[in-house]
Image 1 (cartoon, rainbow, N blue to C red):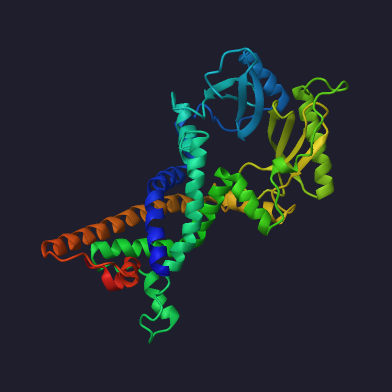
Image 2 (cartoon, rainbow, N blue to C red; image 1 turned 45 degrees about the vertical axis):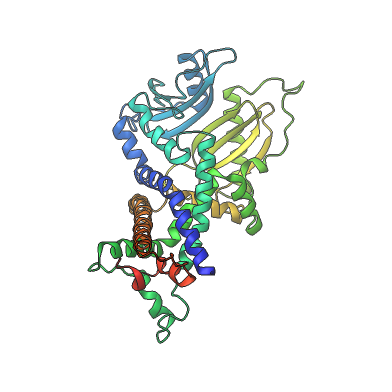
Length: 422
């Protein structure tokens, strides 16, 4: 009954995942062109590069707090040329803000607009962030991460089950070699019945795209179930997450009772990054972001460097004490630890941030292919269910007991050449 069990597992795992994979496939197909679509929706937020000298992160942070005096800055992100995202949170005792990010012109510091990422969209500025939220956590932070994390883990495991089920049945067509018997699994018989075409698209599509499906499934686990991902990767590679790399910090002291001002934070980040560039032999290309976690008492300064592999943005960073400016961790996307390098590649492949436009087109098409695999899988299950129901009714009308399915009958679900013209 071994193969019958895997058939059963693949069937019900696929049904459980289908709705979620359709959603993430459609949203992911759109997010592959996130910059273009977002700029089309909100051109006022992204005016593009223009002449002038860019203001520093500290200056822009100060400007944002002048515009929103009831808020305080938590992040300065150089998202796109001509636009800077300033993350803001309410000051202690102040009412909640009705936005999460304010966009400023990096040259004039003029406000370009405000955006909310973790709520239903209220303006066109919120549409793409909401779609991103649907894709990443079902637009339900917390429980949505858990649900999609579980789906991603099932998807990863099911990739191996599905691959196994494409292999030819032992003893079938024994006069042919293994590859000759496996060849039909890679092909689509376009002249066959609609049902058979659906099955072939499901099976052959899954085989041809198997490697990339596994990449996207496992990288999804890294985004949504970091503990599971971290423990697995540590068992295989030298891998550490940025939070695990952070050395314990002293926090406020008599010598450093207050958080660094933004000017001090920027200067400390630039100094520490320059030191690490010399030590680890990499080139700094441009600043990306300055993040402040008041709760943890830490600041992260992020740049794009020669260790980054993505077409856009960057993930080279130093993390330092928000009071003393002392270095706590260094995070290099590649070349530091094998597991971190693998993770960087997985994530950049997932977000279509490598290999330029051709790969982004491929990722967009892959999202639609995931939808196709889910829909054809549900259709195959429904047709088999209808066939079983019809057989049961036919047998009942003859007053004969329903025969118990054996392994051979259950295996027919994954072998269209022997049972797919019902």
